[in-house]
Length: 375
Image 1 (cartoon, rainbow, N blue to C red):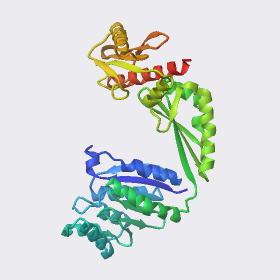
Image 2 (image 1 turned 90 degrees about the vertical axis):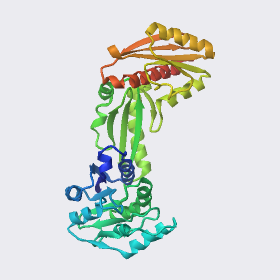
Image 3 (image 1 turned 180 degrees about the horizontal axis):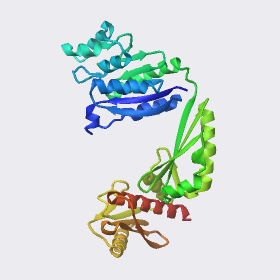
């Protein structure tokens, strides 16, 4: 099974000016191919540092994929860096230049002189046309490694990756295994409690099981490697069944499921209408569900009063309220259903700025469990 590392190139990423989405897309693509991703790195626009990072990756991985730094300006250093890492010079490719000029001509323009840089690749590299942009890609092969350099523009990178690089990797490395991943979402249990209940599963080699704690939500990732997608799915299903047996109702969904959507679906299935009240959440709850009234400051008692009033005004069947108290890291929740009125206070030991989101998620999960328990 080949291994890979990803190197994203761009000072603008290091400065936080843009968000790197390429790494995630490449990682998911490699995962589906059954390639083991060992490491991801971000390097600024510096030839020596990029070359050093590539040489280091060549010591550990079979496949090194770079993104970015293939533009026409002097601060687009990837070509020179790859050549330096591979110990070769760069060379101009007429066929790549023709592709660059043809692409630019589609926009009714003529290429600038500096755009000839985009037709330069390390000597001996395999040039890869870019039918959706002006930055051709290339593949540099050695006895052990392949270095694949892709554009940094996401739509260009994704097109070349799937149309040219994936078929190349499948043939080059005889890729026939797949890696499938399923993520279960839980709420109502802390990461430590989830770990206590499924810790033995986290020691498995294949499938692997891992935890990722968010604010009020804990994700459980199940990843299986197999000869076919069917086999991988069967392996995942077995582990998933065990997790459901151990965690029960704490699991609220999987993969793209979101807590607020699960809650709203349950409320709708009950035939209920829902209204909510929030205080101190800066609109977090209002952005998740409709019909939310926001108040500046509410105590536990005034929260219930506001909730009753909102319920009457809107003629809603169910009302959910949340108010946070930053001074003592606590929150009050209130819930009105056709059967009862309930209140609940929770205290939080994490970063203060995360208290509103944590309280909102726990409140939504509270409504979820009540809706599931109702007849």
